[in-house]
Image (cartoon, rainbow, N blue to C red; front, side, top):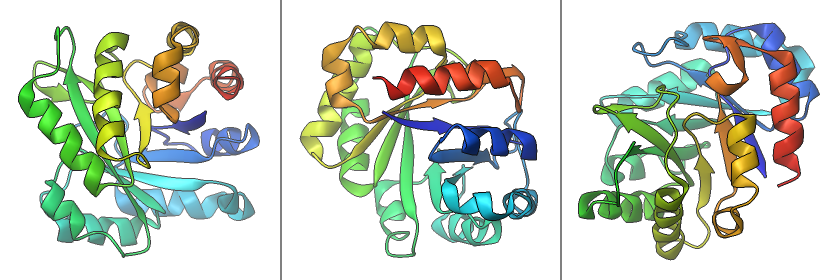
Length: 226
């Protein structure tokens, strides 16, 4: 199971993630986030870790208004990949071939009994356009950063749609991901067969942007066994 730890803001937490072998580290540059960092500070943070920088891929989390804005911020941050909360499939297509991976977050409303026709269409389109998709929760129209969890049955539906659209797509589960959530996931063999990774932020913190070392190491250790 691929692990991504997101919302990193401190050098010590980056080093802790590297020491536990986390391959994907997320840095959020969306102003509405409690874990927001300007792209210039993200670059500085990445430079501070020295040779450890070679041991992980930095994922810049953005909500840009255009492909040009996304490209500019990716280059300024020094990231290896981008995770988008905005842009259409046709806009995302313009970012391909630029030397970095492109992921797209798809927000699934918490409490929804089924996937809407529009959401199914989005999942299909983004799965055909992106290198990977993150399924995150949305509450009252707010996507991501809610800490809320999506029903496993709904996630199974979403992952199945994505996998049928693109067998090679990399799929991640986000939204309230913590040790207890992983333990529940371990018993869902079908969903496990459909996804590739998990993405945690608040579930391994003691406050926004500050990771709890014990929670972090326990989470990563358990995820590797799935």
